[in-house]
Amino acid sequence: MGGIETSRIHVCRLAVRQFQREKMDKNKNYQFLKKICLKESIDLFGVADISKIKNEFNISPKTLQNLDRAVCLGVMLSEAVLSEIGQAPTKLYFHHYKIVNSFLDQTALKLSNIIQKKGFLALAVPASQIINWEKNTAHLSHRKLGVLAGLGWIGRNNLLVNEKLGSQFRLVSILTNMPLKTDKPLKKGCNKCKLCISVCPSGAIGQTPVDFNHNKCFEKLKSFQAHRQVEQFVCGICVNICKGK
Image (cartoon, rainbow, N blue to C red; front, side, top):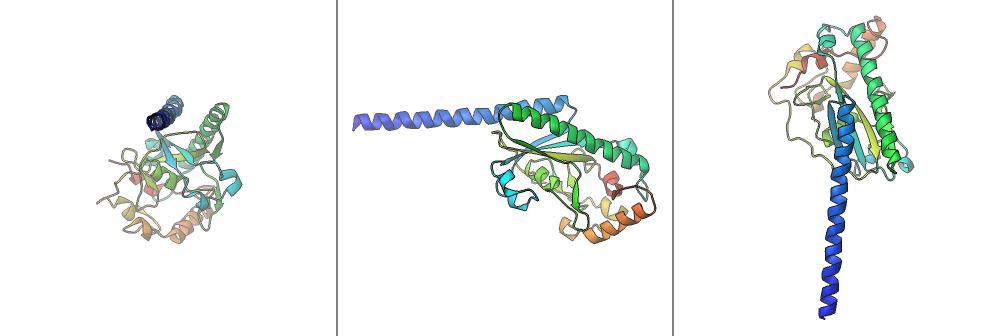
C-alpha cells in the first residue's frame, strides 16, 4: 500500500507542477503581449474568455474551433477633434475615426503575426467592418468582448464606457488559442450620469442600455450622410459628451 500511496502523491505533485507551469505561461504570455501593445501606443489592453459566446459571432465555427481567447485593444480618440462636434459630426471627426480604425487594424495585424510566430493561431477582427447596417451587426461585438475583458461596461449610449476614457476610444480584437490569463468584467456602470440622453439628436438613448433605440440612431446616421456631412454612418455626439470620471 505504501508504494501505491507514494505513487499517488508523486502523480499529484506532477499535476500541481503542470498546473503551476501552465498558469505561469498564461501570465507570462499576457504580460508579453501587453508590453508589445504599450510600445505600440495602445491605451487599453485586456483579454476575454470567449469560449461560451462564440456561437454569437458571424465567423465560421470551423475557424473558431480552437480560438477561446480574445485580446482586446483600445486607442483613445482626440479630445480636440471631438470638441468640434456640435449638433452633427464633422469631416475632421470622420477622418480621425477612419485613421484610428486603420491604426488599430495595423496594430492587430502586427500582434497576430507575433502570436503566430510563437506557434499559435491568431485572427484579427476588423475594428470597423459592419456586415449589416440596418441590424448594426459585424463579425462580432468588440464592445461585448471589451466588457468581458474588463475594459468597461455598456453605457446608456450603447457604447463601451471606460472608467478613465468614457466612450472616447475605438476597439479592435484578436482571437487566439494562445494560453492567456483572462480579465474579469467590471462591476460598474454609468450610475447617475445621463449626459448622453440630453445631447442625442435622435432621442435614441434611454434610461438603460436596453432602452437604446437602434432604428432611431440609424435614421439619424443616414440623415447625416444624406446631407453630405460625412461619407459614412458615424455621429460622435454622445462620444464627445462621455468623457469618463
